[in-house]
Amino acid sequence: MKMSHWLGLAGFVVCLVVVAVYAPWRLAFRNLEDAATKVRAAGFFVSGDRADGVIENGFVVTPRPIPPMDVNLLLKAGKMGPVWKDKVWVTRIPHPTVPDDAVPHAWGDVIAFGDSQLLDQIESKLCYFRVNRTANEVDGN
Image 1 (spheres, one colour):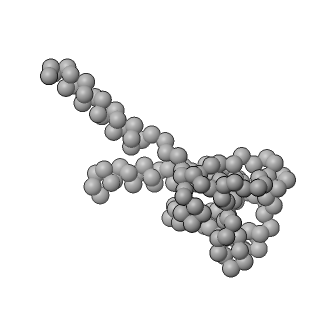
Image 2: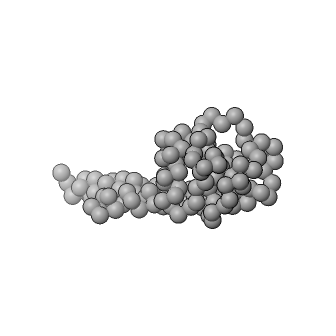
Image 3: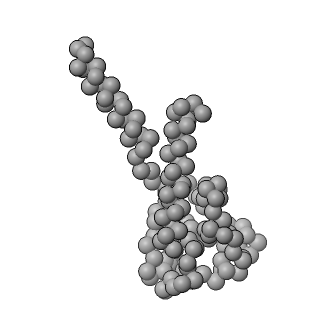
């Protein structure tokens, strides 16, 4: 093989590695438990939909702990309003209702909606962890 072919092949391999490590990742959770575990690991608070805190139909993600009663007072139909500030609801697909002005984000087998800034923070942090974990696995760490 000529030197130019080797250089071309090496450049192609480098491009593939860069894309694999730094390309944007989509979040894809298998179920609510998987989503809750990974969201907690990223440093957010997760509150289940039942009074005892167990996750049955969904959960709320917040940057700070909230009282259990606040979880059940979130209206998931109609307008979202200011009560949704710093709150994201995560539930199974399909979910029968979504607030009128919500923009649901599909995360594999779950959807999330609520405060758009918090959604962006969650996605950014979880995708960052995934990229770094993948890069560390490649390095053998």
